[in-house]
Figure 1 (cartoon, rainbow, N blue to C red):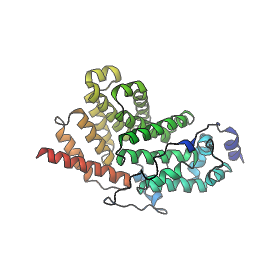
Figure 2 (cartoon, rainbow, N blue to C red):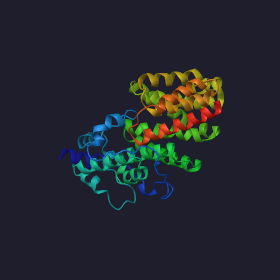
Figure 3 (cartoon, rainbow, N blue to C red):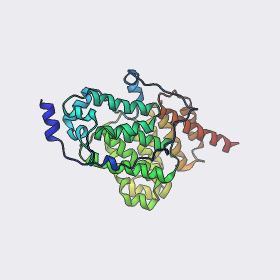
Figure 4 (spheres, rainbow, N blue to C red):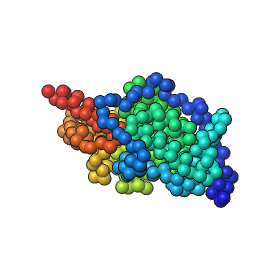
Length: 329
């Protein structure tokens, strides 16, 4: 009864227009390639492999107990109804009544779709589940956009959509790490696509730098944060050089490299780290760092992969390595 009272009476009355979420139009979602490995996380397989699957994100497994704990700390994350929705998803209604089993299974299914490469299905289901479902829905859409979407306008629109709603969520969940992870990732990807003047005026560069620095300090054993910082600094240096980058944002070539070295010391078995490292070194100076780029890509393609997300990162490494090899001949 106490839990139900807290959920129904304390949650902040946020309004999010899920019906207005600018989803990638049906028919425009690119399918996970048939040529890449297939993954089956049906039944208990997802829970069994969860620690391996979340080595970069550290998102907690959405068990009923975990969701109940989140509901007590962030009631609106579990119970928020979208503006203009005529009814809540049944799983959210049951969570409002204190029963988190159905919501746990629904959110688990979103992640199952994601790791199997069913990104559209993951997103479609996730946006029906309130704020708690938007986090995995946005994660799936971010990785899909990064690794499969090729249209520049659609890529930018996807990331900006996610930023807008993620900022709203982040304001009301008080440093909830999964929400901040998605927000900073979207910031970083958006900045890569914006012209320099627009990137500067957006304020997202400072926001991303501050959030990533904060999370690296808070979670010093998580490799993804120094890797993202390294990519951020490399992007600044690519555009304005180390001198201006150091004065304005503390970005230098050596700092970008040091962040990636720290990331690889923490984690050397994730394709995404090597893929991002190779991309950053290319931005800094593809000729100067040709050896490091080649080594990173070679390491990437030799790793075992455990999900569609990892397989797509590895495919990106293979494509870059093939281009590098052709350029060297």
